[in-house]
Length: 325
Image (tube, rainbow, N blue to C red):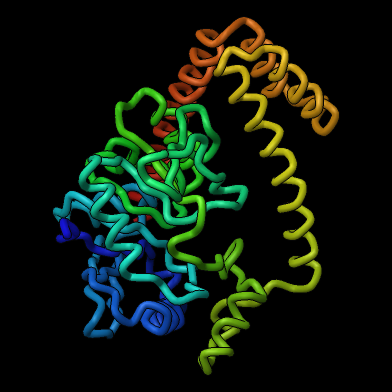
């Protein structure tokens, strides 16, 4: 099979060093025969595990800038991208993963997402008859670019990594930028790598604590506090509302970008019921009703303005940091 070299890169930073031991203990438990070299990206701290090679990138300036340095070190044409709070919850089928890697390489796929079904990783838009279980994540789909676990063509990932981006900006603006790229984005309909996000807003989610305790791992809750019951309730309610809103927004945008103005307007009206004062939604519907070219132009302009503002803000922050030092 054409699978090497295909490293697994776990993107992290020193502030999340307390997650490394539980992450890798659980990782090796559920994927003991992982056939790929495994790397951890951090700032100055290393992780003591002979199965894991640490890549040190220095100061934690911006998330994307650090990832770019990690890619410079790896020098591989494809890689798996993980975040350090994505804890595996099911045995990984290595044979299936190897087949997916071979398929991606043979077809020169820019990104092959390993998970689907959440508000951050919708199922593929169009099924691929020649590859059962796989589908195309079409231009215009929400979260087409995501930090969820995926196999990336390094060249594609680099084109989307503006060094000033944080993870959320990479997802939001990268999704828009990807529409103008020839690179293909595919995804699985059934997760190939199943995991839970175990930290939210810097705090342990209940699932994370449970996974660790089930493995007999003691975690230092003084280093990272758990979410309170109120935190969990708010997060669940927020996720439910976000899922409903994102599904409607996805339907609205995809309809307009496909030239289906009536369907776009119908779902847009449901969005207005939820957020009647959102200028962004009114703008999307207005340009969507003007046609496909108009809505695509709007999103390109939005991405350009956002990137310009992010770069200026990042440069100001860096200048202030240098003055303080």
